[in-house]
Length: 583
DNA sequence: CGACGGTTGGACGC
DNA sequence: GCGTCCAACCGTCG
Image (cartoon, rainbow, N blue to C red):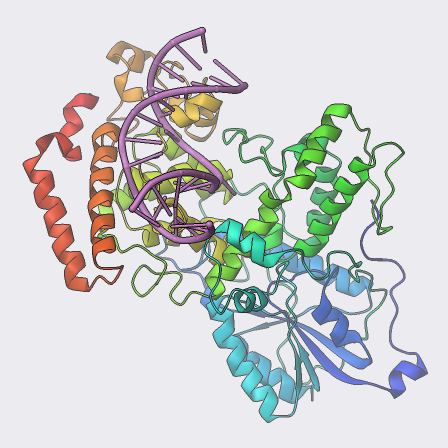
């Protein structure tokens, strides 16, 4: 598969025609860290004499926080910071091949940007539209200045397949709240049948820098991260080049394509992850979701025709397919089962998130059930620090800390466990942990999934609880995943590895892992805790229905008190009492 | 009002 | 590995 853009023959803007016409543009990179399918970059370079490609290192995200529970800033773990820096280095290299470079600045982005616009006498400001509230606020400030200074602003939607505003408008002003209705409203993306412009052969050069403080892409050490203790880091390298390489490999992998929309997959397959990990690249825009979409569409078209060697309809991609009948059948099924594409889910969450005020909170969020979650910081800490005593849960949390990535279903298990399944801790607390540690954490998708998993919105079958014991066992009976991420349990026989507290003491001794000393006892009993969660959710749902979702703070406090009283009257449901069962 | 579907539940039987 | 039952929620649609 050829690259979607050419990296050959860098050219500079010495040509008299180029020199004579055009003005000065600035492309502000935030997400969209790529050259291919980048309308903002394309527009910036069109007819411009100078183009300033800028990235601003934002202390809000990047400043080291020594008090954080793992290395990193307040809002981002070091894995994601590193992934971002790698993506920037790659972007800089690609820009250099096109006769330009990346200008890295530091500070509060809107202030830095406004200073650059003045200093460089910029006439066109280009940046990808971003739906995240943080960028929405930032963009207002920058746009206000630009309009007062007579600067043209170009801010295209290119992070998602659809423009969330269009879909909300088409749906009568509110975002569709079910995936099916979203698909109905969304239809096909407007650009789906026409080729994306993905080729940039050269860029205008960077003009004089003046007094702005420009640096190369910093290292983590230069950002102030020193003496870091963590030994294992994420195996995923950032950047557009890596993204396109992974995409190419994935698409040539028949099994992966055939499984692309299937919900299942083995969450315990950690050495060679069950899904080809592209999510962090989509998050940062190292990979264009639209380009990805077209590649997949291409594969399906080719397979459908499966008589002759695959020929790309848009003439840009050909895949090394040796099509088996099975695979063709599978793929054809997928073609018509189009609606399950993960990429469409991404747009679904982006649309709902954009159209829902306070999407990232329970209070003031019109689509969120009001539930009196507990604020038990000890249970939260046990979950966060991988010491719940349930090896399946703890192994997943270790993978989160070390890799910043876990299988989708593994995320479901730990999110369910923390909230509606076992610990009844507020989903916002879990959301914060994921948001910080995941290398692919994405504001809309992360919050959407926590709403989903906690039965606060979208999904309401709170009786369906993932078992912290049997769910993992189903996929990985030997417990290899646990042995890898929790080496303390590596010698525990498979009969006990999902429930080590049930192992006879001589077995524990032999495995060199005494439960309660080398590995914790369970913080709760799943049987009683999950029953208790169901009871609480049933009551909370009933009150939500009764009050039409309009619960005051007092209503929540009263409900919480009532739930705790009921718990006291029913000793069987009291999770903390169950300790004796586990020794 | 009732039927129906919902990315991704668990347990059990075969 | 697949079907069936369990228990039963919600929002949507007719």
